[in-house]
Image 1 (cartoon, rainbow, N blue to C red):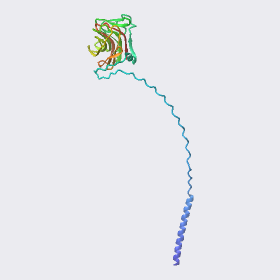
Image 2: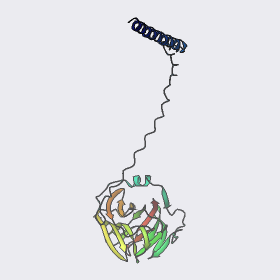
Image 3: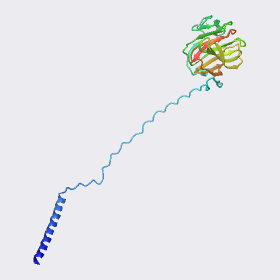
Length: 270
């Protein structure tokens, strides 16, 4: 009995010693572990960002000038275009001059004037009836031409004084190929006409009755722009049409056999 008691005491003592050893080892390990530094209570303030100044304002762009209004040529090929009213002076102001001849540099009687070619007919040459002019002679249907066959879109005009409205015609020519192929605009048997000559056959593209004073010169202008054509007399668009027969060509003057018309101040703008 006494031996059992001592055995029990011995077990208790050994267990107590093991517990003390474990506690001491834990304390030693805790003492050996390094202490972590404490974090600062607040992070340092970031430096202030520099103040950005406003960018300088860009200069304002100048306003573009308004484009000049153009005549309304909107029409399908072969159809007549509505009548337009636009001063011929405005047409000339919109394009630089590319050719002009007032015959002032030619001596009286020059036939043909410098730079011109008589395609056919009879001409009296340069005359002076108060202003220098080129006169057609009665007796033969005639063409007088100049310029470049490479000219495409332009306006050709001249001051024309007709003499025999009831039995003849006189006008300006555009896109002249030869005496059988061209466009023309002018006074034609008592009316203003726009016509085409193709293969020697004349076809009227537009006609309008208009009183014409045969004692003075009238401004006659033919505008060709692509397949759009316009006949301008004394500053008004009287006739317009669409035709694609010719795309380029020289300029000229035309008069009937019975017409002794005079032509002055020939000019081309393009």
